[in-house]
Image 1 (tube, rainbow, N blue to C red):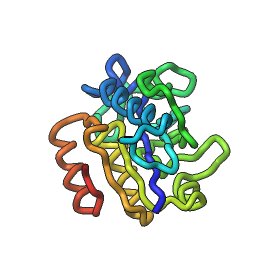
Image 2 (cartoon, one colour):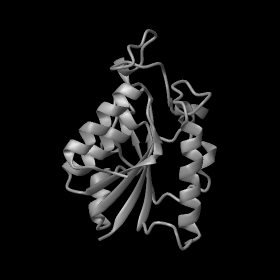
Image 3 (cartoon, rainbow, N blue to C red):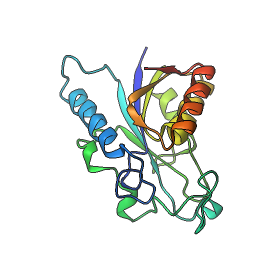
Length: 191
């Protein structure tokens, strides 16, 4: 068994002060940063991860994904636009010891890290299989959108999948509760 940590979209635009801020986003970034710090210094209580990966929203021109009058279901205000500070990882993640970063949504809406690719063009599922990963822990932003989509895709691809709920934040209580039930029904373990 080899386990990967997948940190989903912990970017400035999804934290307080960003264009699509989620309440508690900066705190989630801080707690994930602590986990990454413990993992990098091999602290005795740190989880045993073979690798740490990250996903990032990476929008150039995602078409109708952006709207001046968003419905917050299919359309959203501009966010995580390439070249802006909003697209950067939140500074609370330091250190950022990621073995790979997967960029999604360049020219179309994308919610799952499994839709992303590294700058070299490697898909997340292929990268995990090439590195003999069998289990993944998913955390980040947001529980009801990109964390949900990434966790569901991980299960569909055959990975034993856990979502670290204390390292996530959702947009709305109702959609977060629905996402939790959907993930649980799909076989995702919620810790």
